[in-house]
Image: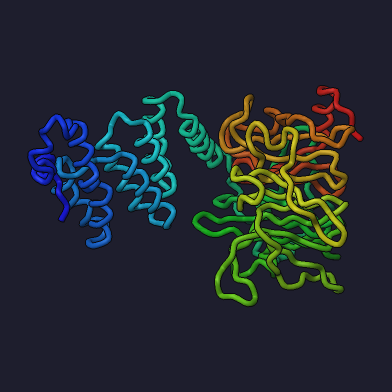
Length: 452
């Protein structure tokens, strides 16, 4: 039987509780009571398990909230909320966080957690409101500031998205000829890439990769409310075909294609079962070219995300599995013999002062492009594009922001470079843009860096 009152504890202890020799003072009594009492988090979890969410919240407000028999432990309720988030139950998490914020209205952490719950649940408006409230209580809440910047950036992304609807059905002949889907190449000012063909309204395109011969273009598209999939457009004798789902991507969430410089392998992110299992597994998958130019069957390569390959076989990727460190840096698997050696954290300014994400390595490893958030001088939102150059001694330089010409207060991420090295592609405003790679030359001389 649980004893839920200080009076009960005193009866249990007997008269010795009042004896000076026993050393029992009021603080000890309260401590003993807290060890025996049930927290509001425990009570809420039990109610949800037995009655379901709606009934549990109603009963909680009637019998638990404000009841001195239960300890309103702020930390315990936050732990419960994040437990629900980890288990894919955002509605339960929001309920726990809301109860906690109401019980601790002056706690910035309680409001920050409530905001995060709403963010995971997909309610950006409420997430923004509660992050702002948390920051008002604690102006040093850097997590809240970062998330608030991202939410406002996403709103800018939606406003900046092209209104162009798709002009062709998947795989249809477009009549477009010439390199890059017959699009006019950009200069130092970024341009929307292939509106109505690649970049389109009511969808999210990113992660573009081009085959070495320029006759295949792969990219990721996520329609509103849908999953990521990899599309491919091909150049034939009668012109380009409209993008259609790549054969190796069909049936499973897939994204961020990355071709090796020789075009013989294509790495991509996916969540699918291995051939000998029914259990889906997220990680890096790879397909290889067959003799007829088609792709073979996907096989699991290993953990990670967003692979980019150098000409010498070095593989760069994002360490989403904590193989090197828990902060998810960009890592490299150096080529060694017939395979690749152990992963290493990429140095210089790539992962400092904040870790990089979605890197692209130049085939000769002379520079590396990546997106990262929260660095000094950034434009806000979720991700700014940066570049590090290879120093003469083989180390990586500090990171340089690509500037306001490319970065916006919205989302700017997943850069890549055309096989001829002439154009940079990246995502901003939910669409794919491209810009002349000569923009890197405007950074390189200004920093007085020497290329190897």
